[in-house]
Length: 193
Image (cartoon, rainbow, N blue to C red; front, top):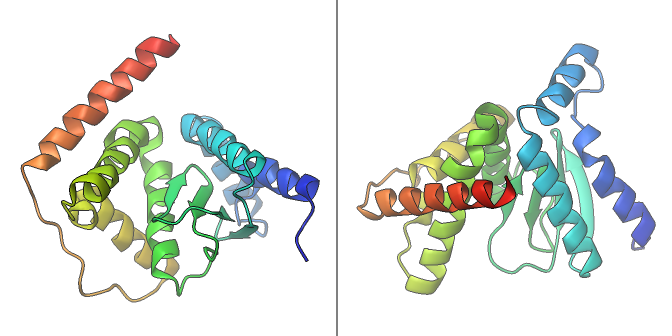
């Protein structure tokens, strides 16, 4: 049975308060503090994207695990992580046996570590890079340093075996992707302020 629209909306709005650390009050408070200070841009953008997905009828499932809220949506290609939200295809769920979940969970960890620097140095380059893979057929996305880092950290934190087929390959487009991302971030900041 599908959960009601209101129930799904409440789960999406409550996601920033779900840390997965209910048994450890100190860790729970520390993670909440991070989400609403150091990670605030990602948390707010994540809420807005999740609500947009819900109101456009894309959300088919909402699950939680390991401190993140996972949205199974109508998206067909890949997944993304923004703050405590992981958004992926309809079958996407918080399952450490799923390679895509583990990878996106690694991006969630990057967001916690990098705070506001996550957007210009990981999220935006990743979006641009994914677009270049799809549109231009470059097939370099999974070999970028920030993608390999996410995969490694996801596997480490969830205590799952690391795949043997991941490796960083440097390409001249690494610089291009980062310059475009920083220029885009600067334009967004200038537009907002």
